[in-house]
Image (cartoon, rainbow, N blue to C red; front, side):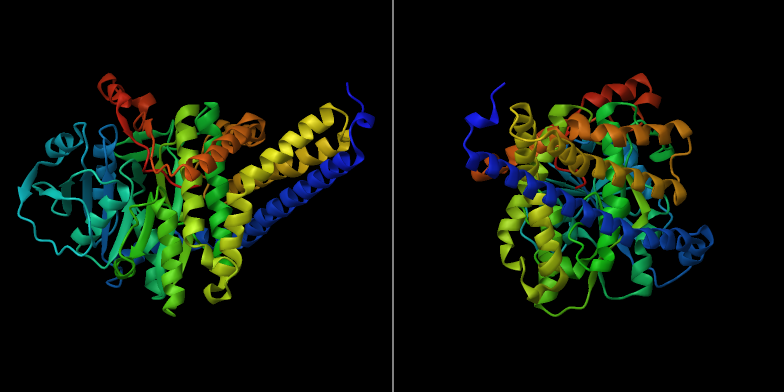
Length: 497
């Protein structure tokens, strides 16, 4: 093994100093996560108590509940669209409609909808405000009066949502993915902030992982944790991201993410900013940044908030290839959005958004894979060649990985003592196990995927990638339904973590 005497002193010093900077970076980032956890804990339990069934029951009779149009973009969603739509049509909410936008599907999604909901074509009665791809037809259901299906040429998820904004009849819109199952009372819970505070621009709820859960008639009847490594770790990841990551931002006033799979908006604000941007691959993140910018520039006192108890369930990737395409796209979209709206960074005009949230996303999210990759390379090779003392490697592991695992365990504990959605003890054991397994392989994989995003962004890549879904409740399904698991669909309908 080469001795450190063969290496110039300046190089060893540079190595030590760089490793020390990366250690401090990891410590500060994880400490900020810990701060978000501390801010989230009291809010979580307050929402848990406030979300009691008797409170919700009284809310159902309130005439002040906002009228909501649920927008559901769908492209090649044959594996899940009928079940997902059924869950939306049977929500416990008095005033709403469902607008499903078929975005040029090449599978039999539209035909399945026609058969399941007895659709018939109707004349267009829509005022077009936003520029979108061509709409081919509008359909109503003979069995569900609140359902409207719009068939259009393919233009992507953002374009489909803009078509939905034009077709919507009500002043509030809920953006929802076609592969998402919403719990019966989720919309009622999501609408509560609008009952008590008129200065709300958007509200986001929790996304949970549906893989391996038992699904009947578009409802999750038994929440389970997938025993497979990839899906199980993502279950922990989603708990951490939603239960304290986004909830903690409420008190800081800088929420920049409302998941594209489950978010409620004031429609007039979205039309004022010309709807969703079709030039980005992460339209949900870009929309909120642009919305926050619009509110600040026009001195509109309205906030973007997150509440933890409205729950929607979505399917996560179960193969490394699909996960890689998803995470690379997410990070590429993050880079593009930060570059587009770079004038907000450290700009006091934009309040907490400019002085706190945008810098956080720059240093703790955008640059994170670069810093972590450099730290990993320096630590491994520096230790292997005797250029760094073993204590550096131990410190890097503790700060960069063990600290994060501790925060994951904290999020599991918060879930257990509050909502306790996973009733089986074996599921809790799995969550704890996956929290410890996440730093070994999974973290490194996601770093690699996000590093590729920088290269593809420089090349001008705007592709979404493709993925395969299993469909809901595969383990409980009959053979005919299992065959639908092979349906190949767009990867554009994923919640950001």
